[in-house]
Image (cartoon, rainbow, N blue to C red; front, side):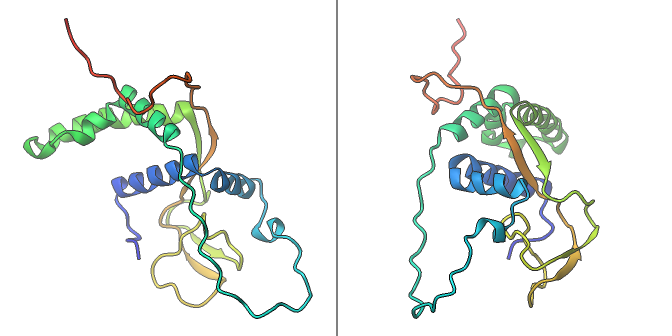
Length: 192
């Protein structure tokens, strides 16, 4: 079970992975959009059939689709261009003092934040403040809310928000020329 007290960088890593999953999976993005519009799982499901059901057969594993990496590569390029994100992550920081790392992290943070705000509208999944007590009724959206800690029994669940979560409301990535090589996230520079 994941640690409920994720560090800032742990949450950042989780958010980036989730973000790329949404970019690469149209069905996941459409499902999140429907949830944001207030559609519940019960509304999205077709009306149940009352005819007697045959003996349950083993359900095949869902087919996994390969995600197109172009949008993820485009975002990585924007983060590199405006925040030197890849440079920072690829740098061996063991030889630097904590103060030097902190100063560099502040610059990377500012650039990453600017990119996200320019190209995405991101909102919290839950509006309540972290630490607030909440009750999750039966049928809560398990893709938007992850239960942590001592999870036993069934809903309703009572707990405290340890992280409000994030969801993307709008994506505004620039269009790419057809011949653009998205795998080059930062061209090499040659000073003459």
